[in-house]
Length: 170
Image: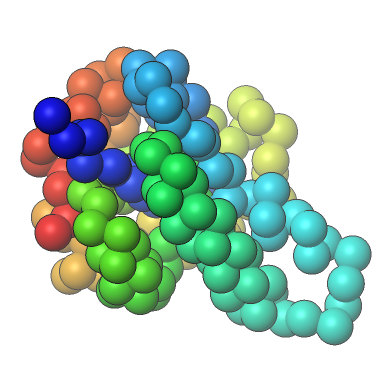
């Protein structure tokens, strides 16, 4: 009996929609999985002024892809918790070389819900960026089939949907 096909879960969306909570909860439902929190990679470049924010994001994605490919080769499923702005087709191209299944979702919520969540977390400085990303990600036609509103969903609801086949990218 062959091994099961590996899965890369890519969980995108602006700050305050539940990406990290859902990603951690999803990881708890899977057995041989690694959770990659993209902000950790982005924060590696926090103290350098030599790179623009866009360059920091690009380098972060390069590292995330490199590690993900190694983990897939070692038979792990991978969950990536990071905002996907215009990297989706590139990511799919990178991961398809491993013949894995890709499950992509863009979590989003009502502006008021997002702002309330951000206030509770104390990330006030992220409000404008989060709303910019909300509009960008929900208006992108490429994301349309993968949008999931989290206004009235628990993290368990989100995980249940991610474990279903609705959000497969290929």
